[in-house]
Length: 319
Picture 1 (cartoon, rainbow, N blue to C red):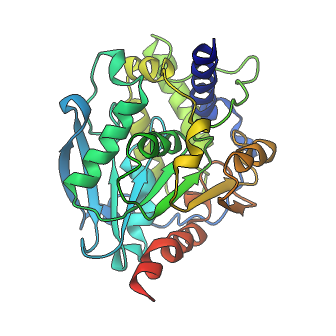
Picture 2: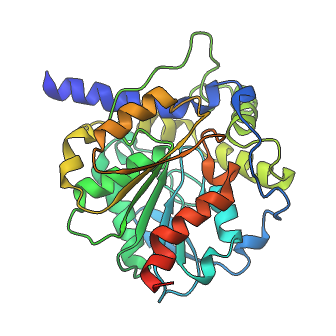
C-alpha cells in the first residue's frame, strides 16, 4: 500500500508538471526578456558531443566556456531541449563558468528508445546525468533543474549521493516532493498524448505561447516549438508511468546547498504550492521572482544569471 501511494504521488507530480501546456497564456507577464538575442548565435562557439547514457542511449551534450572554470549543468523541462537555455549561453556567464546543457533522453537530438521502460524509473534519469558529468570531466558542478528537469536533478541526488556537486538550483518544479493539482476540467490534451498529429501541432502551438512570453524573439520561439514537436507519444507515455519512490524521503541525504526558485505568477507551481515545496526543503534557500511565471530564467534572465554567477562562478573563483 505504501509503495502504491508513493507511485501515485510521483505519477501525479510528473503529470501536473506536464500540465504547463494546459493553462491559458494570459497568466504570463512579459518580464525582462532578452528578445533581441539571435536564436543561433549563442551556440556558434559551443562544443557538441555525445555521451552514452543508461542502456547505451546517446545523450546530446552542448558545452561552452573554459573547462577549467567552475561548472554548471543545466537540465531542461519536458518537451524542450538544450535550446531552453539559449539566454544563458548568450550571456557573459561562459566567461566565468563552464556551462553544460544536454537533451534529456527522448528529447532534442538525444536518443528516443521505444521501450516505455526506458523512461519510467528514477535510476535511468540519474544515470544519464552522471554520464554527462563524467563525459565532460566536470568537478563539483552546480546542478540546475527546471520543471521536470528538477525531478531529474533529484533522481540524480538520490542515486549518486557520493558524486561531489556544488549544490542544486531547482527552478519552478515540485522535484517529485509533493502531489500537485491535476489540470482543470476541459483542458486540451497534452501535445503528445493523442494520436492525431494535427491536434499535436495545435497543442504544441498553445504550449509554446504559454511557456515562452510574447517578447521572446520569433526565431527563438520557433526553435522551442520545433523542440516540442520532436517528442513522440511513446516518450510521453513512458514518462507518465514512472514508477519508484517519492523524493520526499531523500531530502535528508542531500548535504549540498539547495536553492529553490519560484515565479510569483507561475500557474503550475503556484505560490501556495511553492510554500509546501519550500517546507519539504527546510534548509534550502528560497528566491522568488515575483513577476515571472514558469520560466524565470527567460522572463528575468539577467537576475537569474546573476543568481548562477554568485552561486557558482564568482564564488568558486573568489571574485
